[in-house]
Picture 1 (cartoon, rainbow, N blue to C red):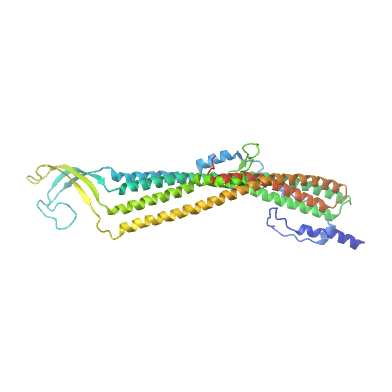
Picture 2 (cartoon, rainbow, N blue to C red):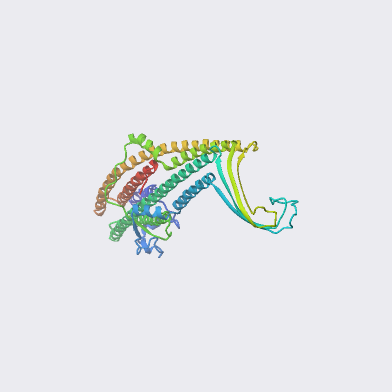
Length: 476
């Protein structure tokens, strides 16, 4: 009879050796070996919270964190994130390059003042002075140079810089959307982690009550020590879930602080903007229309297309270097200090037109033009590849949003069903009509259902924002 009873008690034990992939796994600091001799002993209830080895909690219960909504987080990210500031400064720098190139079309005026002490009448044997004969003198004057025409070379360079400036402006917008997407991801992960932490705390409390009840029934000889050990193991599993949830909240808060350029020690408490239900997802049949919209709105694609146009203009500008350059020159000044009868009169003035023709440049111009054409083709291919990626992301985004939306209803149904099953299992266990195994499985399913319901909601909200990002419609 004792042999039959022992076999009956030990038969359900392998069920607890199976791993549940839906629950977060954590490494054990010191593995515990199950000993059958423990069946005859009563294990003390594991400690929870700050009582775990007297170690400080991962989250300070006295610091609830700074409350923040998604819109507030996006506003702070757009204001403080250094990536956005750097991209804005690069756009301003691109505007200055346009001004630099356009300056070649404007008059160039230079002034000069020269005082020279020399051996009067000596001639230059070597060096870079312009006069071949030296005289002690002092003079001041100026030079004006005005480009008449270079047959479109400077004009095309200016057009190239303007297109590159517009491309940098689009890159700045793309950077803003990248930062906003990173902010939304961190925000919803924090919301999700906070909800899972509440689930974990409720799970620990419920399993602690079960462990206390089982301990009392064991002392009254109404339950076996095996039931108490199983209840204690379930409580330890819930405490592991609680540790993982605390770590997830702390990590998500640190990730959000990083995106907002705040101190890594800053603790945030994410709050939903409103209690209104999320909007329904777009229909899967609308992916073609959404893709067409994305092809027009994505700023990173527009930046590549503008860069390709800029290289086209630049190739033309480089090719135009083969043509002559015509410019006007004028110079004038005075020499108030000079030897007698040498600088007569004591002022000077001259003007003229200069024609410069590049007969042979060692194939430099042809190579520069070919380089620009090759870069244009490469940029066009990059734009084509990004266009294909956008089409894929929009299609996948629509499918993910639709799937996540449907998961919400299924997860809620799963949670309601497991809640009823758990209530029935608790009643049956208290009446002695079922074993701890049935209650343990009901508790496990209840935890899984609560986690699935939390994940389903925030996965859907994040899927909507991801789809907006793929369409180029992400805005605060």
